[in-house]
Length: 458
Ligand code: ARG
Image (cartoon, rainbow, N blue to C red):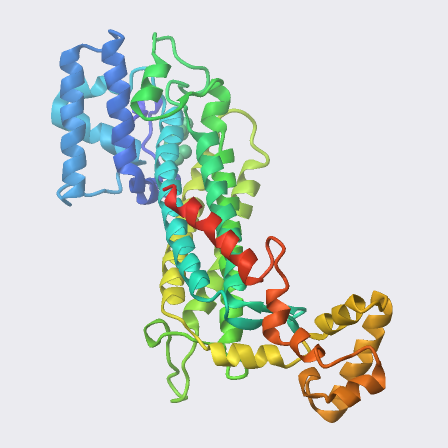
């Protein structure tokens, strides 16, 4: 059944119907469509626009449709254009004339704007919850690894010793910001468009505050044209998801590197790895690679949406129907990736011995050797040059700074004394970095306490 057959004399071409239809994907928010309709008729009856009798009949009908869809008794069939037409047609079939009054004071334009908001609002909450779980996993690893020394890198070259807790803390910060970004979007988008009509409101005395309240919104939107053509919140949400995926992807890249034969910093659990059909020895980090790969897909949703919106005059244009598949795919992909990633992270074994050994190599304590000289009165620039000579000497002899004898040190600078060995030990290098945000155990414990308080607030 069509909602708009009156002014037409010919049947719609079948290809046009198929091309125009959105039921195959907007059926995803049938619950929200029905929830919005129930709020709408509740308000209509309160305003005296609908009789209580009609309201009861409509709500009963809508609930039975919802129950039947849930139970698989009512299936989506192609002759309906979209979820709104589908529900209305079935309502009229079930309850007769009262059903024809449902759409009083409403357009599909404000209806779809509402449905999409209700759906994404729920998904934003869910994603926030998943990020919370990831933050919990990260905090657990941090607490267990305040003293686990590993190399920190710049340019993927060993730079200075850090700890595993510190490295995980960097990701805690990223996902913490991601979570607060979702909270911000939720706050900004939580205004109800219902009652905006096609574009110019309606002539009925609707109570828009009341519908907003019934549906848990902060209030009604304040411009009906904007209400039916605003997709900013979907763009923001796609941007937030793109950033989440970018963070996950960087993390995955590190996990892939740490899992190589060369590094062996970690063992990914068998249950989160896959094998090769030809090479019997292989255990591949496919999950990390897939999360990294799917990042492109989520970026695609952001770019597609921005491009779809950029040339649209006010108010509603059918182009906007294209918002759904991008966003649905981005939501399902991002949620799936957070869940899979968290499971993988939770079951990873960290090879502390390998991390420690790696930190010992590559002169990660060279800065500390220079700081030692500075603490004994040598200007930093000169100290930098002296330690550069030490490093050259060690490379030539194939030893580390800690393996040089005191005589060898003194031959390059007489300032060095026996205590240089303690000053450049991995423990000292880390322990001395105790300014807030640094890897030193004292600083780390303070930060962990803040993170614990944040997670306890939930
Ligand atoms: N299926 C449509 C969409 O998703 C519903 C709104 C239709 N409005 C219209 N004026 N044709 O955008």
